[in-house]
Length: 79
View 1 (cartoon, rainbow, N blue to C red):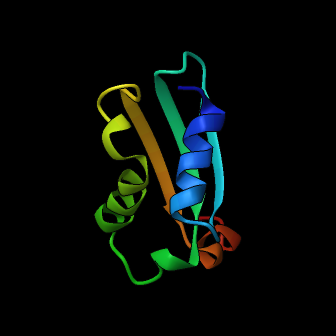
View 2: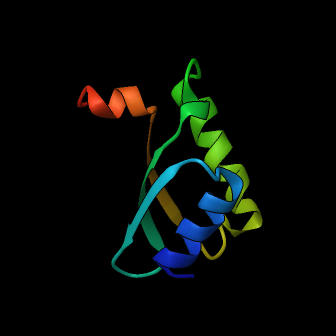
């Protein structure tokens, strides 16, 4: 998988989200996901929402994914 494919999968599962994915080796990824749906959720719950969009690719084609999950307000506040 490449970063565009990972971003597309996350975007498909969270259509209103802002998604940025980076990778140097197409195995280890970092992602910023900004979504209103994250409001009121703990970080673990937010990450689980993103993992669900990737299904069985996690732990397989996607060996590692470092996530930053924010609401639009958190992003605007510089968190």
